[in-house]
Length: 186
Length: 186
Image 1: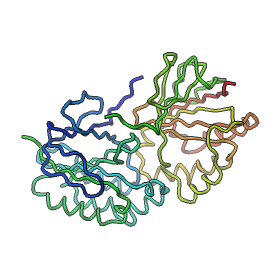
Image 2 (image 1 turned 120 degrees about the vertical axis):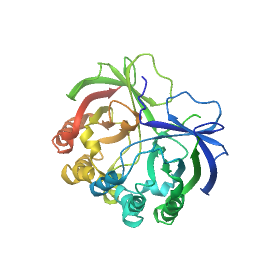
Image 3 (image 1 turned 90 degrees about the vertical axis):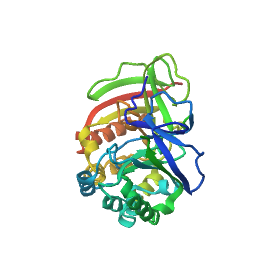
Image 4 (image 1 turned 90 degrees about the horizontal axis):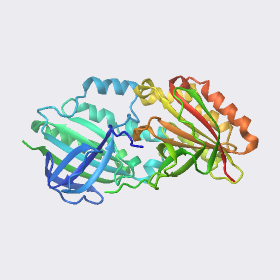
């Protein structure tokens, strides 16, 4: 009866973990409880008792990228875990019911044709690596967690990236967003 | 730390349950263990000890339907649980890695432009009600479970519907499919 959860991860906010929290800002909606560290684990790993909150997410197929975009992304993007990329941002997001009531063609039109979500992210590759985790179908309070990793010299580039995304039409559908900045513990 | 799973269901195959199995056929790939009954429960309900297998699935947003298709579907389709619809079919399906490697525009082109998946289903509405459950992201052995409900006089129509779908280009990506026919217990 056990379900295989190799693609499923838990983000644990608490008083211990690999990642040290350097700032935590509510961009829109309710803030998360303050924590000093985040740990990222396989979702079936035993949980630390020091956790204040937990958000699960899973890696799935991309929902909007065309073949052209996917090929371009794969040729430029790098994975998480690069040795120089000791800065991370964890950005959990919840979109509105109005977003989820849209049909696929309407979501795609807003996501890319209008908001250039993939195109904007592409400009910052390979410097800013990202991984999207899907949380909505798991019944979480957020729909997605996006995890970004980059070097210390790319912090301004990262601020530019999220600034561009937050100015898009797509972001009008974001009703909760928390921006957590992190540093890998030595 | 508990996750809300209101949208998540468990299909339990075993020796008891609301639905009596009248036939069980492997259309492609490995058969499921033979069972006499199926029960459909909320995924967090306590499990019966009489179960031989369990497949979890969740109701999510549609991945391919355009606004035009969604509006047409919603105007014609009826829900599960109609009093006259005492016949059901449970069809778990697994698609190939090649399918999941496709980009969104490629999957959409095969699903609808070539295979007319939504258009075929529409022809049999409202007689044959259907609900799609997503299982792949839960790490299940199947990617989807589709549950159909209809009246005794619509059995031939249902055979026609699945016959049309199995002849499509989309079905070339199906590597496992089991077709379980059921009757609601009096």
